[in-house]
Structures are given as structure tokens and as C-alpha cells.
Length: 205
Image (tube, rainbow, N blue to C red; front, side, top):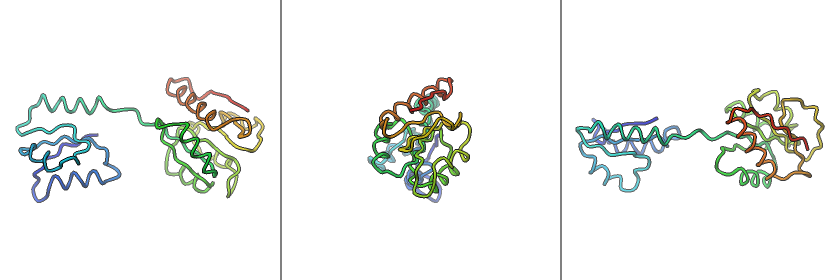
């Protein structure tokens, strides 16, 4: 998504509008192309706060330069980060897992069954890392709330058998596996899904 913006608007300031756009949680990262008869003046006015402005075009607009600016926006698009829900009430485990997964994924943490249910109701997740023993119930109760496309890794201190069926791709016990082991498995599963092989990894420990 991109926006062309004239700095001199009828009845309002284009600079104020730009700052309002950047303050909006919905449009904070939208790419902006300034098209104005006073582009140089506007550049000086913003003075270091022109985050996300791809180019400054003077009127009359050079069509080749406009096309180049649009091509730059299209070219820098990246795939959205995989969304992971980590259901865990231990702050230490949450922190180590987040560090292990790195910045290539978007992680949402839920410390209770209720928080996890709310997160699942409001967002679509590619994968869920699930603890069983939560303060207000069993993490396994969440399995019925998840779409069939969502991968599930159980990472819990509780010893579980393999009778959870195909709904769970991996069961890892905290006494036998570390957060880094789980993070490695997550990356493998996400790579398999991205390459079209499907989340077929089975790691029952």
C-alpha cells in the first residue's frame, strides 16, 4: 500500500496529515510519495521526521520518476512474518523462546487459557506452541479453537502420550528438550510449510 501526498492541501496542512498518518497504528508503515510544488520546502520542514517517504516529486510530475518511486515500493515488499502464539505462563520460558526464534517471526504470548482463547478469536496464527498446565485450565482445550491449518507444538513439563492424533505435529517435554530445540523445530516446520511440503514434522519426545 502506498500514498501520494500534497503538502499544501486546501484547509489543512499536509505535514500535519503526514504526522497523523505516522501516528496511526493502521497506517504507521505506509509508503508515502510527496507530490508538491513546494517539495524542497516540505523536506526541510519535516527535518528528520520524514520516515517512510520514498521520494519527493516537484510539480509538474516527472512520470518516469513517479514510476520509479512506485517500482521501489513494490520491490521492497516482503512476505509477512509467520505469526506464532506461545501459550506459556513461565516468563523465563517465554523470553528464551522469543530469543531463540529471533526477529523473523511475529510472536504473541498468552499466559492463561483465557488470554489464549481471546488471541485465537482475534487473530489467525500459523503455529501455536502450547503448554498444558495453565493457571486456569488445560492448554489442550485450545485445540478445538484452532483452525486445521494451524500447526501445533506441545511444549510442556507434563508427560504426554502420542494419542493426540494428527492435530498436534510435535510433543516435546521440558525435561528432555530446551526452548532452543523447540525454536529449531519451529523454523523447520515453517520452512516446510513455505516450501509447500506441509507441516509434517513429527517430534514426539
